[in-house]
Image (tube, rainbow, N blue to C red; front, side, top):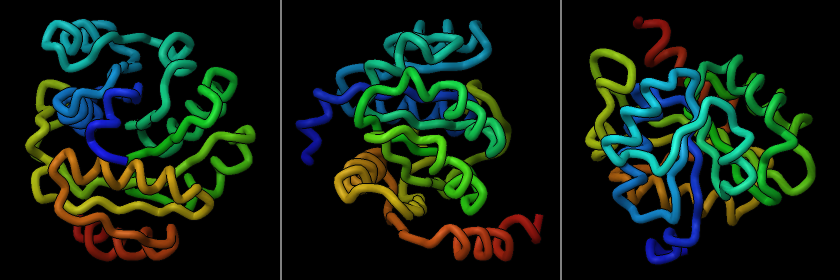
Length: 195
C-alpha cells in the first residue's frame, strides 16, 4: 500500500485524549478519505471539528464505525475491551482494529473471542507522549522519530502492513514487533516500575 491509497481509507479514532488527539491530527495531514472521532465529551469533538482535526465527531460509534476501514481505540485497557464488545455489531466488514495501550497480553487475549469473522485486531503501543494530558495537549509532533510497538498475534499480514505504513507516515522512526508477553515484561521493567 502506498500513501496515495490513503485517500480510499476511512478511519475512526476512539478517544481524543493526548494520544488519540495527536493521532487524529497526524492522520488528517495524510489525506485519508475521512478521519472520524468518537469521544464522550461533545465539547472536545466540537473543538476538533472546528480545528479541522476530524471530519466529524460522535459520542457513539453507530454512525462512523460501519464506514471505517481502520478503528484506532485510544482508551484505557478495560475500556478498549468494553468498546469492542459493545460495538461489534457496528464494525465494517473486514475492518482493522488497533489500540494504543501499554498493556498487551490481557487485551490481545480478551479481544480475540469478541471479534466476529472478518474483523482483524493488531495490538499497538506508540512510545510517545508529553507532559500533560487531554486533547488540549495533543500534537502530531509527538510521533516524530518515536518508536511504535505492534503485537500482531493473530492478525492478517495485510492488516499489519497497513498499520506499519501509517505508523511510518505519521513520523515514527521504528516499528518494533513483539509478542504480548514480551511487550508487557519489557514495558514493566523500563516504564511502569521506574514510575
